[in-house]
Length: 572
Image 1 (tube, rainbow, N blue to C red):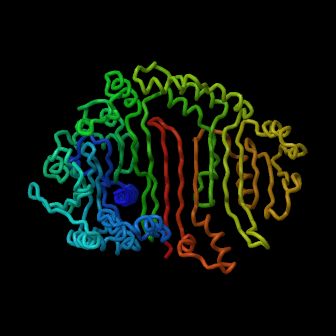
Image 2 (cartoon, rainbow, N blue to C red):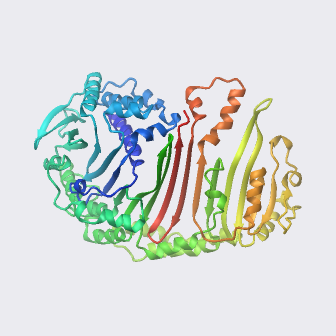
Image 3 (cartoon, rainbow, N blue to C red):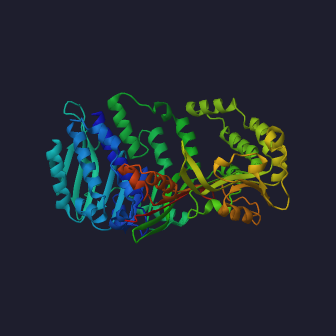
């Protein structure tokens, strides 16, 4: 049973992660939203048909490799349910080799829309399907291989398959439900402890009494955050709080209350008091939702560009003001995902860090909560003080950020081990007075004592000053460039360092990271080929791992913002 659940979880997570990446933009389908309850804690939709065939063609082959760990885990599994999910996953891995094979394997259209939401705790996934008979035939084949068979049931004129997920000896039942009606595949669950009428709602036979289509929630998110209208996702924190602090505040609360009455165990019993409900509701009102929307999307020539923004919405002006106060400086080179192997930037105004953190600390201690779990949190916080950090931040007075970037590198095979043949990289410290900070560090690092940094921006050769051995394979320089202390090696990094003198300090972000996996793996693969080593298939594919990623963390008027960017390219 454990392995069956693991296999199901792997497939669910993989499918969910892949599907979540498909959220692009068009106007909401109000006909579909009429069947989505307004109190769903989780919602995600692809309103505009997503070109799934072209997208799969753009995925590098390295991302299409069968996970050996799953194969090892399941090789001796005899449970029919585990074998069923493994068979389904095998079909997925076989089909994903190219877009046409994938859509042909599952009977999907070249482009599709999809919706995910919950009826209380019951998940519902809907997506377009072009050839139902193809999907049913695949499932029939998997049933024959695994020994897990379905029951064919009918409700409201719609037939559906129900696959049992629990043993017959269990007192309760949970069935995986699949149905196709009017070109839409619905996947959901049916349980013995949930309202039977939910199946009718999930299959679109009955509309919900308070549908999402009549609330304006989706339109409000688009207007507030400026996302592309092709798709969006959100988690409703207020509905989650209702579910754990009330017995009938929403559909999820009612289901949990009924389920816990059967199990005789309620892990949220302490939170269902009036005082906990009031205080946690107040917190949720300050942090109402986490929303995800797409900011960039393009698929062509086997290449995908996709950008999306995750916003943790906040109405807490004190905490948001403190986070804005902390924002520091991120150099321009940390934003260039196309010309580096890896970049990292941390923007923090050290002078403001402790005062801002103190504001957050005091806000979390006010008011004095009466709800027991919140009281315990405050009691633990009262024993600590952010003011103690002032002893450490005082030595970094005026610092606005620390950044680094690996532009390029080369490897060679030495007599005993792999050696660094070339390095192009830069590390920068941005501050009001970086020269003073460097002089403050000297007494703690004797090897730096004799280094005098010119104020005109010219560089000091660190190899000579620090007597670095030549076998390191690179030369390092240090220079003051305006408000930036730069340590760098290589021609491109020198150009970046020279350009820093023109970059004035400003509060422009908190965190930035990026990586180019193709550039990261290429030198290692090239060296292994030159050495004559036979590369395992999984390493061979890394050579063509054409994928760039970028992550930025910041704050704006709406809340805490996490911006992500992914670019993939299949060169074959």
